Image (tube, rainbow, N blue to C red; front, top):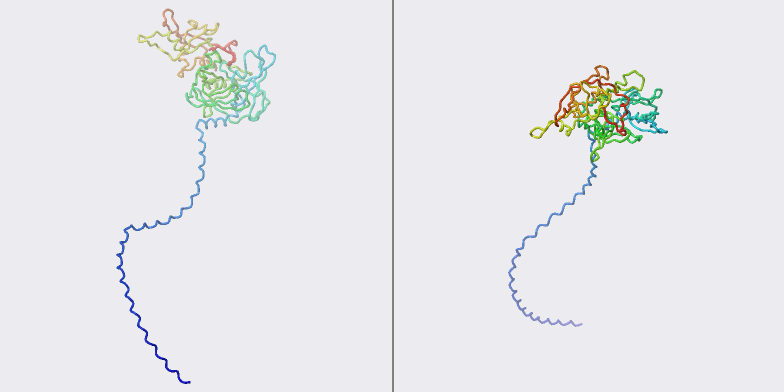
Length: 435
């Protein structure tokens, strides 16, 4: 095959027209000023995780009870030491004219290992009655025993009894001691124990000594007339009579015997002071005579009252300034018993409205600076160591103008209290106090 003729050459391509030049770029706008805003605050540090809650504090314990005061502790201590000595007394008696016996309850306390019991005379005896029986209840063994009277002094309302022989109560083993009531200070704490309202319970009442040698305040109401009494503001009730009065050291300072209520129901309690009680009890127990034994109280044979300020106005004339003399001692005589030592005094009998100022040279009065007249009279020569003859200084109206008076020294021979005047004292009887 013939050769293929040579291809003709491709004609040259026309040159591409020059590209139009790119239009000039607009000039770049000036860069905007960086904003002047403050740098953003640095992010706060992440909060530290909260500490686990502290466990709640345990509840505060309640405040302990306030400790007992010294008075309360002393009272409780004396009570615990001597409450076994306090017994209950039942007196069974038949009043005059009655056909059936009745009973009355009181208190007492054992003072020694022999079983002697001190109480009030009015707890174991009453006037115008036959005493049928005496019974005592011991709370050491919760048993009741027959008792008998060893001795008594009606005028100071003191008695000693004991269990009839052949019986064996469970006696206490600790016994209180006596303290001279004249040394007890006004304002001291004191307490009484007994069986109030006839209940078979043992009670305690605490208070303050308000007098240590006073006349019984109920005597102004013609009731019980104990002289040289220990008085307190503690409150007691019937059935406590005969119970002990202690100081806060556990010493005996008296016997509880009476209650007096004054204005606004103010209550005073008290009884024979230990200065007299101890002498009476010791005398009775020292005797060897058959029982019951009687304390040999003497008597003058007068009734009297303290020499009051109103009475003194009529005795002592006023001065030019209008004041008048005042004595804080002395007793004015209200009555004189016929046939008594007072009626036989020399050189002249004691008279109504005489004021007894001194006894054997010692001033007498109800003020705490003096001892009562009756203490001297009742205990005169009771032990046989002195004499029954005494001297009394009296103040007497001389007659005539108000205020005229003379003093006179009288001699009197005291005698034992006659049976007609020797009655058991009782808050229900209404007897006039006598010396």
